[in-house]
Image (cartoon, rainbow, N blue to C red):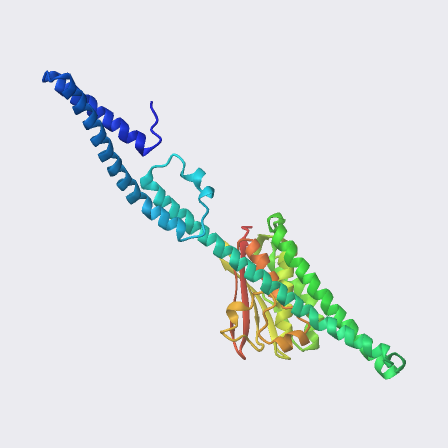
Length: 345
């Protein structure tokens, strides 16, 4: 089959066909030879020019929106030649617009990722700056003569140690988040008793709770094994419980209570960690799972928090394909909930 690559070639072919037809008609009419030649050449030229004019106008009409799309965006035509090859003109504009829209969305996503990266690095630098400056100040004071003062040296060394511990906690949590982001697909799911795990974690946190007179209660822990069995990574879910229980202790009211409750939700088990502490403002609630976000920055640092605990919780729960949320009122306490896949016994 003959391939027509240009509009000029197409117009010549159309003109030639028209000329042949005219020549055949004039032959049938038994016209003189010079009349046949003139009529054939004139028909060829006129029809060719007319066909070329029609095709140029048609192609321009069809390509105008394509050029508009290309020049309205930062698109290199060389990048899309392969995609548009051998496709009909009628479809190119629509497909190019869709491609360009996808390109715009990808650029927007990359810009958001870059903004998040800069914000994240700024937060890390800010969080590490405070303990580093504290350590520097304590050591400078000791070197300037405080080392010989028994009333000063031990106190400043203890403060420096506390700042070092804070840095270690921040780096440890950052390492945990990095590991979670890269290894979430390698979770080792197993079946275990959710109430029994909650009881074990609560017992580990009892000493810290007793310092503030807070009572930890795990509903159903007196009747183990319970009926609340789940399929999940036991180690990571233990981290979730520890973070949420420790948070409830740090921001709970002295002499208050933290309740850990499991509820049967058909194919899911709902876990609730409820306290009667200071609560969270409604404006802050949607952001509490962001990295380094604190509702009370001064108190959070005083309590030793890194601002990463709830971000770790969210990573782990979403890594299981589940959801974590919070309900809270200022002065009334907070309730953190998450779901896990239920195992039928």
